[in-house]
Image (cartoon, rainbow, N blue to C red; front, side, top):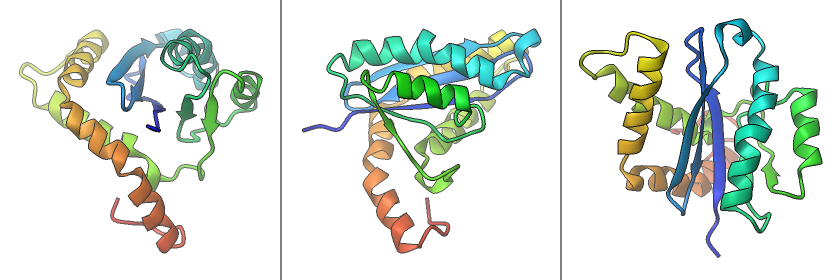
Length: 174
């Protein structure tokens, strides 16, 4: 049976927007969405809670209508807030929530993806000047990612877990 997981990270806040995205391995489906406005840029927990039903829930119900989808996030403060955890518990019949060590970069392929994505965007000419330019550049670059790169990172997860266990939680080469 093929393992499929949804990986999420709100990141790259420009002061005006933050970017939410998801990767669904094994199916090639991806989603990139901006959220927030200047007046809500400080309310990360509230914005995250709005994203869960607006984007995550609908995405998971389409991609994993059998309820076997697995959601993973990085335990950042908005993700670990009481309201977010409560929402995830209330929707536990819709998809599984992968529990991970708090803020463990050794197990977070999203850091690799963001690093690669940002390097691609930084090389654009002309560079993005506004929040909307940045979002458009991120969307375009994200769509141009070779599927093999993303699949390789997803397939590295068992090795990342094993490496982290061998290192007793200390840093690894990942």
